[in-house]
Length: 225
Image 1: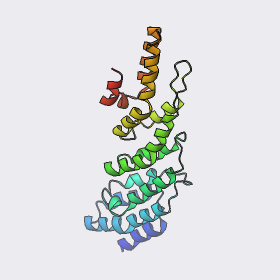
Image 2: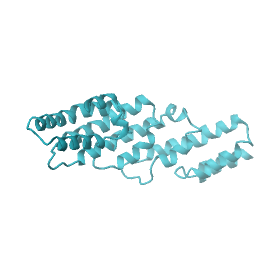
Image 3: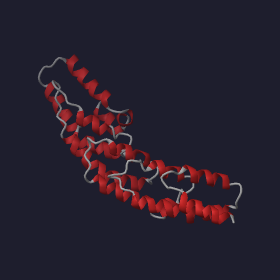
Image 4: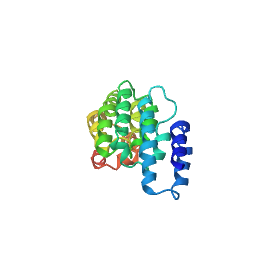
């Protein structure tokens, strides 16, 4: 008699986007039912409902952040979310909506950041490489190095992604779109009998703008020495 009541509650009453009632039920059942029955409930009553809700999730219009109703289940579905294609659906939908994304819209950072440690390394790097890095590279290409009137907006937007995108991607971006321009301005300045205190202040100012996780990368440290 217990199983039909559980089934009725989970299949007909529980709303996937409010995980707490189902989590409370699972917690209360943990010491009351065998592990095999618990796994049956998780895999046949909860997992399909989560997958169905993810399939209907629309990242363009949904106001509830996805991780708020998916992540509480990660301890129960450490491999199942990937094996049953749920994480694949999420990545596909994220990639689709990011095609129209512009880096000045920082909402993408809020949506993506919680998934960095959920997606495996290969899938995370692929998602970042396909969707985020081309846009950040384009943003950094608009940066004009001008000691007299510096607009840091493009630089600051890119650096907000410093602990999200893989470090080697950020190094490649900086080596392509930042350091050549920066070194050229520094060289031109040093060639024109400058006030060296001003140059030093400018140099140290730029160095201080790099987030620690980027400043400590060997390829970046070499540029400043």
